[in-house]
Length: 349
Ligand code: NAD
Ligand code: ZN
Image 1 (tube, rainbow, N blue to C red):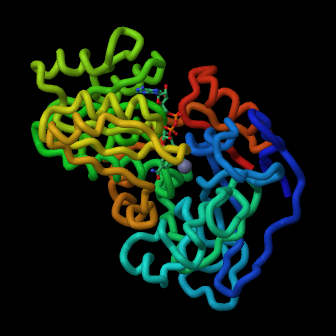
Image 2 (cartoon, rainbow, N blue to C red):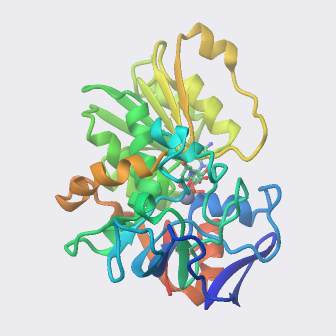
């Protein structure tokens, strides 16, 4: 089958590899109908993820149709349309039972196409082996398109978790740092918690424009210090809540500096560095609440699905490109370089 392999910095290639097969009796093999390029794939593309080997198959956002199941799989069967979370979890270990499937000790916190724990090939491919299929696979009803369902496994759940962790209360002002796919879905999700105003920070004009269409006031980084700009538009105090969806120390620090005393910073950007500097003293004296982390997307797939079905969340609005899988190298390039007004790039095998 065709799959997208990492070959070096800014070098991903379409390669021919063996089809996946059932290895464990709890596996399923899924024929992928749609996958995508995630901001997290860009960290690998930039060569910033330690341990990534040339030839690794990338990608962790996918949905598709079950093609084959192992003999112990009960919850799904051949022909079912399913979505799965980006992280791989057994559903049975202590961490999974505590509601933290991303910490699964059976897989060692594995992610499809990732470099932690056990290594599982990624989802930018024609097929994928999904371990622990009973826990991992969620059936999608036929009234949902791939475009509506796909992001439940990663960026919609992550954006929602970011907003939820912000503890937004009715009437609050919220600043979203980063108008990439994750930030835009955090913005959409933030509306569900009843804020009075949402500000969206980025420097890419067409991304700010979509943020505006989604109900935010744009704050352009290139028009001055975003901390000052946010203070000015919030009567001097700063927003109640900042949602960080970039994954760099600069916006994390800016979020801490911008938010009002007693406010909350919720961060979902992935920090590939071991440690980052941040204004701890300011966070301390302002009495902030800080929340960060990888998203336990499995926990959100079921509760968010009806919100998508009734249109209260419209994840498909961020899709700008749908390319054949074979065009993935171009998909990475335009998403990374922000060419051709790219926001979210889908890949169709
Ligand atoms: P992206 O790279 O398209 O988005 C980042 C956006 O931030 C860009 O539009 C960029 O212009 C903007 N930006 C850069 N510096 C900024 C600053 N100082 N202030 C405000 N905006 C700034 O990627 P994405 O797909 O939206 O992903 C965003 C982050 O979320 C990545 O770090 C990704 O790894 C992470 N992520 C985390 C999880 C999780 O489980 N926590 C899941 C998915 C993605
Ligand atoms: Zn992702």
